[in-house]
Amino acid sequence: MTLSAGTIPAPIPTDSAERVDAVSTNQRALDEFLRGVERRALRMAELGCGNRDDALDLVQDAMCGFVRNYAAKPAAEWAPLFYRVLDSRLNDLHRRRNVRNRWLAVFDRHESEDGDYVDPLSQTPDLQEPGPLLRLAGSEAGKALDAALQNLPGRQRQAFLLRLWEGFDVATTAKVMQCSEGSVKTHLSRALAALRRALEDHQ
Amino acid sequence: MSNFDKNALPEWTTQAKRLLDDSANGLDAATLSRLNRARQAALTTRARRPAQFWFLPAGLASACALLLALAVWQPHHAGGDVSSPSAAAVAADVDDGSADTPEFYQDLEFYAWLDAQNAQRKEGEG
Image 1 (tube, each protein chain N blue to C red):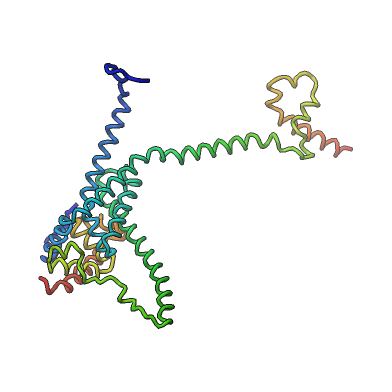
Image 2: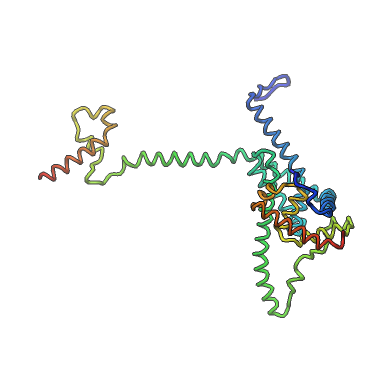
């Protein structure tokens, strides 16, 4: 059916119109939420995996997983749920890396038997080497903090970033980390002590 | 959300937070562009979701309907048991005119069972 220039299209039923409005409102709210967390999420992922490209992939996976599974939840619950998804993706990446490193270790051994020895330590990323961002900023304190955070055990780093940077309370952090509140306090305390030691020269 | 006691945290953590904020706010344009694309991709996933959402219940409903059809169909076609003659055989035996009524066909299973019982009793007496 073709509409002439003056034809008025049939009005959309009220229910449908309200539903469309609700969906578009929800999309806008989701967009704003993701826009608000994406930069911090990227930095957290980068500190966790030590690589910008992997971190971007992780954040995209986390965004898709979050939208697919939790978009219908109340907006107040989005932030902890998003970081839980991100943490899950980060753990998956570490597992994959461990498996790959195990295989690489086998091949390295074969190569060393042929006399072409490759030092495994030379293959690991240099944690003291700042990311491109920090190099541009030229901040010694920033570099030191970046390196110190990358050197922290994952759970301690997570507790520190979620509590101090993201500003979650202990209960919410425990929910994201899927552990008890006592464990969060322990991880945070150890993280603060380790970071303090590492950053003493830069205070 | 940030309702924890900031006084309990060491002073240097404020500086650490500021440094982290600076690093997040100073991301380069290429990275921001990739983040934007990632966000749009995620929101597109959301837009596609309603169509996929009905696959599971629709599949379950179809499976239930199939199982129900099989359950209804199966008892009428489980022939071969000597002790329980088929419903068709019972219908053939009854020729008093009542076989034409719908009530008869509804109680066909009962008549089959009754017939089997009678046959067993006759064998017992003989």
